[in-house]
Amino acid sequence: MSTSEPAFRLDAVTVLYGRTPAVQDVTLDIRSGGVTALLGASGCGKSTLLRSLNRLNDLVPDARLAGRITFDGQDIHAPDVDLVSLRRRVGMVFQRPTVIPASIRENIAFGPRLAKRDVDDALIEGALTRANLWPEVTGHLDDPASGLSGGQQQRLSIARCLALEPEVLLMDEPTASLDPQATAAVEDLIASLAQEMTIVLVTHSLGQAERLADDVVFMAAEPDAAGERRGVVVEHGPAQTLFHAPRDPRTAEYLGRTSP
Image 1 (cartoon, one colour):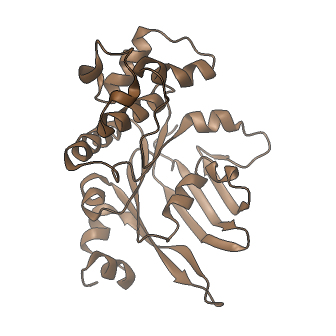
Image 2 (tube, one colour; image 1 turned 180 degrees about the vertical axis):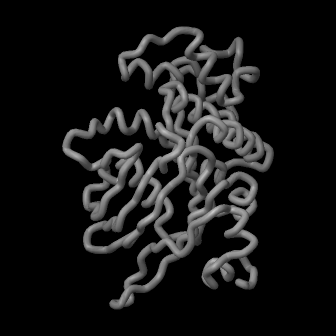
Image 3 (spheres, rainbow, N blue to C red; image 1 turned 180 degrees about the horizontal axis):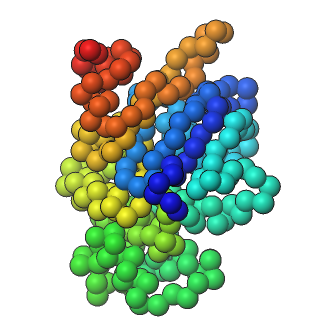
Protein backbone atom coordinates (compact mmCIF):
# COMPACT_ATOMS: atom_id res chain seq x y z
CA MET A 1 0.00 0.00 0.00
CA SER A 2 1.33 3.42 -0.91
CA THR A 3 1.87 5.71 2.09
CA SER A 4 1.40 8.77 -0.14
CA GLU A 5 -2.29 8.00 -0.68
CA PRO A 6 -5.00 7.49 1.93
CA ALA A 7 -5.58 3.93 3.06
CA PHE A 8 -9.34 4.44 2.80
CA ARG A 9 -11.50 6.95 1.01
CA LEU A 10 -15.15 7.23 2.00
CA ASP A 11 -17.49 9.11 -0.31
CA ALA A 12 -21.05 9.88 0.88
CA VAL A 13 -21.19 6.68 2.93
CA THR A 14 -24.48 5.89 4.65
CA VAL A 15 -24.99 2.65 6.59
CA LEU A 16 -28.54 1.59 7.39
CA TYR A 17 -29.98 -1.14 9.58
CA GLY A 18 -33.33 -1.74 7.97
CA ARG A 19 -34.59 1.77 7.23
CA THR A 20 -32.68 3.41 10.07
CA PRO A 21 -29.40 5.12 9.22
CA ALA A 22 -26.71 4.39 11.80
CA VAL A 23 -24.18 6.50 9.90
CA GLN A 24 -25.13 9.10 7.33
CA ASP A 25 -23.30 10.83 4.49
CA VAL A 26 -19.72 10.35 5.65
CA THR A 27 -17.03 11.65 3.33
CA LEU A 28 -13.43 11.48 4.55
CA ASP A 29 -9.98 10.11 3.89
CA ILE A 30 -8.27 7.84 6.43
CA ARG A 31 -4.53 8.21 6.41
CA SER A 32 -2.13 5.43 5.45
CA GLY A 33 0.10 4.60 8.40
CA GLY A 34 -0.18 5.65 12.02
CA VAL A 35 -3.32 5.67 14.16
CA THR A 36 -6.65 7.21 13.25
CA ALA A 37 -9.01 7.27 16.24
CA LEU A 38 -12.80 7.32 15.88
CA LEU A 39 -14.07 9.25 18.87
CA GLY A 40 -17.54 10.12 20.13
CA ALA A 41 -20.33 9.19 22.52
CA SER A 42 -22.06 5.80 22.49
CA GLY A 43 -24.52 5.40 19.65
CA CYS A 44 -22.82 7.79 17.22
CA GLY A 45 -21.91 5.03 14.75
CA LYS A 46 -18.18 4.60 15.41
CA SER A 47 -18.25 0.80 15.41
CA THR A 48 -20.60 0.69 12.43
CA LEU A 49 -18.24 2.89 10.45
CA LEU A 50 -15.23 0.82 11.52
CA ARG A 51 -16.89 -2.46 10.50
CA SER A 52 -17.68 -0.97 7.09
CA LEU A 53 -13.98 -0.80 6.27
CA ASN A 54 -13.66 -4.56 5.82
CA ARG A 55 -17.35 -5.23 5.13
CA LEU A 56 -18.13 -6.94 8.42
CA ASN A 57 -21.54 -5.26 8.31
CA ASP A 58 -22.30 -7.65 5.44
CA LEU A 59 -22.83 -10.26 8.16
CA VAL A 60 -25.77 -8.28 9.61
CA PRO A 61 -28.92 -9.42 7.75
CA ASP A 62 -30.68 -6.04 7.50
CA ALA A 63 -27.59 -3.86 7.00
CA ARG A 64 -26.90 -2.07 3.74
CA LEU A 65 -24.48 0.59 2.60
CA ALA A 66 -24.86 3.45 0.16
CA GLY A 67 -21.92 5.45 -1.15
CA ARG A 68 -18.42 4.26 -1.91
CA ILE A 69 -15.44 3.03 0.13
CA THR A 70 -12.08 2.47 -1.50
CA PHE A 71 -9.13 0.69 0.09
CA ASP A 72 -5.74 1.13 -1.52
CA GLY A 73 -7.55 2.69 -4.48
CA GLN A 74 -10.03 -0.17 -5.05
CA ASP A 75 -13.77 -0.06 -4.43
CA ILE A 76 -14.29 -2.66 -1.71
CA HIS A 77 -17.84 -3.36 -2.96
CA ALA A 78 -16.79 -4.03 -6.55
CA PRO A 79 -18.08 -7.37 -7.91
CA ASP A 80 -14.58 -8.80 -8.27
CA VAL A 81 -13.49 -8.09 -4.68
CA ASP A 82 -12.40 -11.21 -2.80
CA LEU A 83 -13.80 -10.78 0.72
CA VAL A 84 -11.38 -13.29 2.22
CA SER A 85 -8.46 -11.36 0.77
CA LEU A 86 -9.92 -8.02 1.93
CA ARG A 87 -10.34 -9.26 5.49
CA ARG A 88 -6.84 -10.72 5.48
CA ARG A 89 -5.42 -7.36 4.44
CA VAL A 90 -7.72 -5.46 6.82
CA GLY A 91 -7.77 -7.39 10.11
CA MET A 92 -10.17 -6.83 13.00
CA VAL A 93 -9.63 -6.82 16.77
CA PHE A 94 -12.75 -6.72 18.92
CA GLN A 95 -13.51 -5.27 22.33
CA ARG A 96 -13.33 -8.63 24.09
CA PRO A 97 -10.48 -11.05 23.35
CA THR A 98 -11.53 -13.65 20.79
CA VAL A 99 -9.32 -16.65 21.43
CA ILE A 100 -10.00 -20.05 19.88
CA PRO A 101 -10.58 -22.86 22.42
CA ALA A 102 -7.23 -24.46 21.62
CA SER A 103 -3.55 -23.97 22.40
CA ILE A 104 -1.64 -20.73 22.04
CA ARG A 105 0.18 -22.25 19.06
CA GLU A 106 -3.07 -23.29 17.36
CA ASN A 107 -4.52 -19.81 17.81
CA ILE A 108 -1.66 -18.35 15.78
CA ALA A 109 -1.72 -21.13 13.19
CA PHE A 110 -5.48 -20.98 12.61
CA GLY A 111 -5.60 -18.13 10.08
CA PRO A 112 -2.55 -19.07 8.01
CA ARG A 113 -3.81 -22.65 7.72
CA LEU A 114 -7.19 -21.42 6.46
CA ALA A 115 -5.28 -19.31 3.95
CA LYS A 116 -3.36 -22.46 2.92
CA ARG A 117 -0.03 -21.04 4.03
CA ASP A 118 2.85 -22.93 5.57
CA VAL A 119 2.94 -22.72 9.35
CA ASP A 120 6.27 -23.18 11.10
CA ASP A 121 7.91 -22.17 14.36
CA ALA A 122 9.25 -18.97 12.84
CA LEU A 123 5.75 -17.79 11.92
CA ILE A 124 4.45 -18.55 15.42
CA GLU A 125 7.35 -16.82 17.14
CA GLY A 126 7.25 -13.86 14.76
CA ALA A 127 3.55 -13.12 15.35
CA LEU A 128 3.88 -13.47 19.12
CA THR A 129 7.01 -11.30 19.13
CA ARG A 130 5.30 -8.54 17.16
CA ALA A 131 2.42 -8.69 19.66
CA ASN A 132 4.86 -8.27 22.59
CA LEU A 133 3.76 -11.65 23.95
CA TRP A 134 6.61 -14.03 23.10
CA PRO A 135 8.62 -13.66 26.35
CA GLU A 136 5.49 -14.43 28.39
CA VAL A 137 4.45 -17.58 26.52
CA THR A 138 7.67 -19.16 25.26
CA GLY A 139 7.78 -22.71 26.57
CA HIS A 140 3.98 -22.73 26.96
CA LEU A 141 2.83 -22.70 23.33
CA ASP A 142 0.88 -25.91 23.73
CA ASP A 143 -0.97 -24.69 26.83
CA PRO A 144 -4.63 -23.66 26.42
CA ALA A 145 -5.04 -20.05 25.35
CA SER A 146 -7.89 -19.78 27.84
CA GLY A 147 -5.32 -19.93 30.65
CA LEU A 148 -3.88 -16.55 29.69
CA SER A 149 -4.96 -13.36 31.44
CA GLY A 150 -7.42 -11.04 29.73
CA GLY A 151 -4.67 -8.69 28.57
CA GLN A 152 -2.57 -11.58 27.27
CA GLN A 153 -5.59 -12.98 25.44
CA GLN A 154 -6.14 -9.62 23.75
CA ARG A 155 -2.52 -9.52 22.64
CA LEU A 156 -2.91 -13.11 21.42
CA SER A 157 -5.95 -11.97 19.40
CA ILE A 158 -3.76 -9.27 17.87
CA ALA A 159 -0.97 -11.79 17.21
CA ARG A 160 -3.46 -14.04 15.40
CA CYS A 161 -4.27 -11.13 13.08
CA LEU A 162 -0.60 -10.33 12.60
CA ALA A 163 0.11 -13.91 11.51
CA LEU A 164 -1.79 -13.08 8.30
CA GLU A 165 0.42 -10.02 7.69
CA PRO A 166 -2.38 -7.46 7.35
CA GLU A 167 -1.78 -3.94 6.11
CA VAL A 168 -4.45 -2.48 8.39
CA LEU A 169 -5.74 -3.32 11.87
CA LEU A 170 -9.25 -2.21 12.80
CA MET A 171 -9.56 -2.10 16.59
CA ASP A 172 -12.96 -1.70 18.29
CA GLU A 173 -12.31 -0.52 21.86
CA PRO A 174 -9.56 -3.12 22.33
CA THR A 175 -8.86 -2.14 25.96
CA ALA A 176 -12.41 -1.56 27.20
CA SER A 177 -12.54 -4.84 29.13
CA LEU A 178 -8.97 -4.68 30.49
CA ASP A 179 -7.45 -3.47 33.74
CA PRO A 180 -5.05 -0.48 33.73
CA GLN A 181 -1.88 -2.59 33.53
CA ALA A 182 -3.19 -4.69 30.63
CA THR A 183 -4.47 -1.53 28.95
CA ALA A 184 -1.00 0.02 29.11
CA ALA A 185 0.52 -3.11 27.54
CA VAL A 186 -1.96 -3.03 24.65
CA GLU A 187 -1.45 0.72 24.16
CA ASP A 188 2.32 0.17 23.98
CA LEU A 189 1.69 -2.51 21.36
CA ILE A 190 -0.58 -0.23 19.31
CA ALA A 191 2.05 2.52 19.37
CA SER A 192 4.68 0.04 18.19
CA LEU A 193 2.56 -1.44 15.40
CA ALA A 194 1.60 2.04 14.17
CA GLN A 195 5.19 2.51 13.05
CA GLU A 196 4.70 -0.16 10.38
CA MET A 197 1.01 -0.29 9.50
CA THR A 198 -2.32 1.55 9.47
CA ILE A 199 -4.47 1.32 12.60
CA VAL A 200 -8.05 2.56 12.88
CA LEU A 201 -9.08 2.64 16.52
CA VAL A 202 -12.52 3.11 18.08
CA THR A 203 -12.21 4.38 21.64
CA HIS A 204 -14.30 6.13 24.28
CA SER A 205 -11.17 7.21 26.13
CA LEU A 206 -10.06 10.77 25.43
CA GLY A 207 -6.74 10.04 27.11
CA GLN A 208 -6.13 6.98 24.95
CA ALA A 209 -6.96 8.88 21.77
CA GLU A 210 -4.68 11.75 22.76
CA ARG A 211 -1.84 9.37 23.64
CA LEU A 212 -2.05 7.22 20.53
CA ALA A 213 -3.76 8.99 17.64
CA ASP A 214 -2.16 10.84 14.78
CA ASP A 215 -5.57 11.78 13.35
CA VAL A 216 -8.98 11.89 15.04
CA VAL A 217 -12.44 11.55 13.53
CA PHE A 218 -15.02 12.99 15.95
CA MET A 219 -18.55 11.68 15.46
CA ALA A 220 -21.88 12.60 17.02
CA ALA A 221 -25.45 11.33 16.88
CA GLU A 222 -27.49 14.18 15.39
CA PRO A 223 -31.23 14.34 14.61
CA ASP A 224 -32.30 14.51 10.97
CA ALA A 225 -35.35 16.42 9.67
CA ALA A 226 -37.65 13.67 10.92
CA GLY A 227 -36.05 13.64 14.37
CA GLU A 228 -34.27 10.32 13.84
CA ARG A 229 -30.73 10.27 15.26
CA ARG A 230 -27.91 9.15 12.99
CA GLY A 231 -24.15 9.21 13.23
CA VAL A 232 -22.33 12.00 11.43
CA VAL A 233 -18.71 13.07 11.22
CA VAL A 234 -18.42 16.45 12.93
CA GLU A 235 -14.71 17.05 12.63
CA HIS A 236 -11.63 15.26 11.30
CA GLY A 237 -8.03 16.31 11.51
CA PRO A 238 -4.66 15.96 13.22
CA ALA A 239 -5.04 14.86 16.83
CA GLN A 240 -3.15 17.78 18.30
CA THR A 241 -5.30 20.29 16.41
CA LEU A 242 -8.56 18.60 17.29
CA PHE A 243 -7.73 18.23 20.98
CA HIS A 244 -6.25 21.68 21.49
CA ALA A 245 -8.00 23.87 18.89
CA PRO A 246 -11.27 22.18 17.83
CA ARG A 247 -13.11 24.00 15.06
CA ASP A 248 -16.63 22.82 15.82
CA PRO A 249 -18.40 23.74 19.08
CA ARG A 250 -19.80 20.19 19.30
CA THR A 251 -16.25 18.86 19.43
CA ALA A 252 -15.27 21.43 22.02
CA GLU A 253 -18.28 20.55 24.16
CA TYR A 254 -17.45 16.85 24.00
CA LEU A 255 -13.85 17.54 24.96
CA GLY A 256 -14.97 19.85 27.76
CA ARG A 257 -13.13 22.79 26.29
CA THR A 258 -14.12 26.09 24.74
CA SER A 259 -13.83 26.36 20.99
CA PRO A 260 -11.75 29.38 19.91
